[in-house]
Structure formats: structure tokens, C-alpha cells
Length: 153
Image (tube, rainbow, N blue to C red; front, top):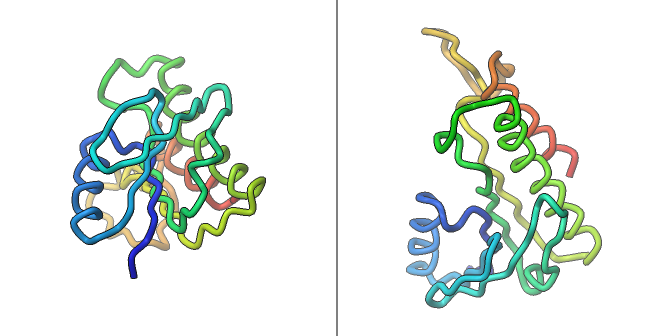
């Protein structure tokens, strides 16, 4: 079944590859980006997570959302402010997407949000499963807050 898929974080390494693979499978792709851009065979919509603004037209005809957006964790030193930016880029964007879906009664059937293995923290040789709780440390906290935002939706 061919889908219309909206991708956030589409200009990152994973997002770029995902667009290519999904297009080769015949899916229609649109993206949410912080700035206008041109990508072949992709409709680009603009959003501003910090201002909680989103082009609601991005949801028209969308049945699947793949949410990859978030500040790059390797780009800058993790100051207190940077850590807050990393967390908010994930939690606020998730909440913005859910609010937009609710406000428009969009017919989104699937919402995929990619957090990270950092959820578990450094647990040494412990065998971890989906049922394992979150770990400790900044990345574990960040991932837990991100997943909580998804669960709220």
C-alpha cells in the first residue's frame, strides 16, 4: 500500500536516506523543515518548534509521520543550555505535531518517533529489553522525556 509520509529531521543522515528508500518503494514524501528548501520530488513545509508554529497544510493527505527531528547531540559542547535545547527540540516538536494532528483532525494512521538506545544509559553487560526501565545520565533522561511526550499524544 502506497502511503503519503511526512518526515521531520529529513535533512539529517538518516532522514536523507529514508526519503530515498521510501520514494523507491513508491511512497509520496513531504517534510517539515526549519527553513524553506528544495528537494527533488518532495514537498517541503516549514515549522518553528521554538515558536510552536507549523504549516498545518503538511498534514493534508498524510497518513504516516516519521518524527526524527532534534538538535544534533554531537555538534556542540553539552552546556546546561545546550542540554535544554536538545531536550526541548525533541519534546516540544513531538507535542507540536500531536497538537496539529488534533486541531486538524488529520487522518494520520501511523506515528513513528525515533528516540535512541541512550534511553537505557550505560548498564555495562546487563541484558536489556523493551521492558527495561530508563537508565541514568543525560541521554537517558532526554530519551525518557522524549518518549513521555510521545505517550502523552
